[in-house]
Amino acid sequence: MNRDGEAGCARSLAGEGRRIMVVGPSGAGKSTLLKSLGLMDGQVKKTEALVYLDEAIDTPGEMLSVPRYYNAIILNSVRASLILFVIDAGRKTRLPARIALALKAPVLGVIAKTDAASPAELAEAEATLEGAGVKEVVRVSAKSGEGIEELQSRLFSQSRPA
Ligand SMILES: Nc1nc2c(ncn2[C@@H]2O[C@H](COP(=O)(O)OP(=O)(O)O)[C@@H](O)[C@H]2O)c(=O)[nH]1
Ligand SMILES: [Mg+2]
Image (cartoon, rainbow, N blue to C red; front, side):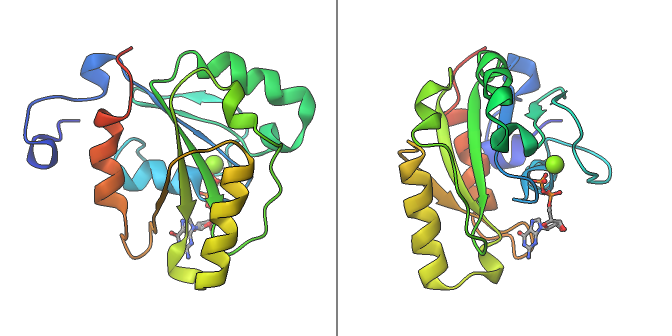
């Protein structure tokens, strides 16, 4: 897909072999976010396995709750140009301490579903991501569209070339 209009130039992630990987608990909003960003087509279904798309790598949330799977995330992160670490703003989330530091690509934290969260919940989500070793965070809602454009513009500026 060509995102001329938004990026102001004829670059595409796929054209440069860049893939955006999403990591986060089940139900956090990862697949929906990929769709909002135009990186995934079709209907969002439960993600049963780690999936390579042209411009994205979608991962199932179980990978983050079962320590045995951490290695699969870390190994596949080598192939990512940017990792979006996604959590649900309105849900208390436990993440493995400092896990983002083990990933082999730049990491950007994403607090999703801000349309349904209170200021206190947003602050808590921010602290949760910080504890997981995530240094920079954006807030988005696939429902209201908040933050989607900003995140879109960061997909290039913060991802590394493939
Ligand atoms: N209110 C609200 N719900 C959302 C948003 N994004 C996703 N959801 C809902 O959250 C649920 C889980 O989304 P999904 O993308 O499948 O999560 P994943 O398991 O992380 O891939 C679905 O019912 C979505 O409709 C959002 O921005 N706002
Ligand atoms: Mg999913």
